[in-house]
Length: 352
Image (cartoon, rainbow, N blue to C red; front, side, top):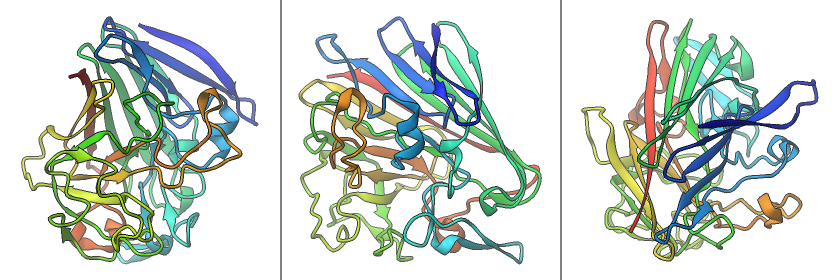
């Protein structure tokens, strides 16, 4: 089932709508056409009690002005690009730099600040098709990129996000979603006691501007080894040399190598208190784990007037690596004319 609700008006007069998708099992998700934002997500615990398990805001103004990318679709190229510079087919490009001298999450606005064209498709497994055309030169990127993102609420209490894109000339494309999950309930405190498992054997250390140093390091013997599930907070130490600049987890982890490019279970998050579990299936090569180290704006409370607080959510951003365009050993984020960008991530919820 799909329900539509008005969610404010942009300064130019365009209306913003929230689409509420629900299934027979009591799971429901609210998605804005502004930014393709996951505004709310309700799933039951082991006793059947439903709770909101993502962080969000109650007003459009907060989403427009906070800067935390809560629940937003991220593009044209997620994460950071060093000094906003890259070279493509012999030509140099300069992007808008919006964080510590680098381009972050698409630049000045990025896809999370755009109004997407929405097409709801009702049914037992409701879908929301979102489309956006990023024209040649937007934020400094070459080529016109046509993007389609499909949110689908599956019957088995799972949310699928399917990203596709095509371009008319060579450009960069690396899309993700920036939802802050808290399986204990959005107002239950930090996620540090929740259990995280990630099928990743390497990670990218970062410098003082959160950019990768260029090295790819084995996770063994570091706080980034989640191959055996452990509480998020167990090895979280801002004084650790690998976390010194980020103040916690804000790093890219490479999944254990799999050249099949098939959808696989790659991570899960589990809350012992509620019994909620979220499995992450994807065909991306890795994910950014972010422990909400900068969610600390005292002037912009979250939904229900909940104060922002470091650690009250965990982002699991499936994507290709940070600044890959300037580090060829990381893999390619280049999309050519005639190619199809095609990736999917499924967040599957259950209880234990």
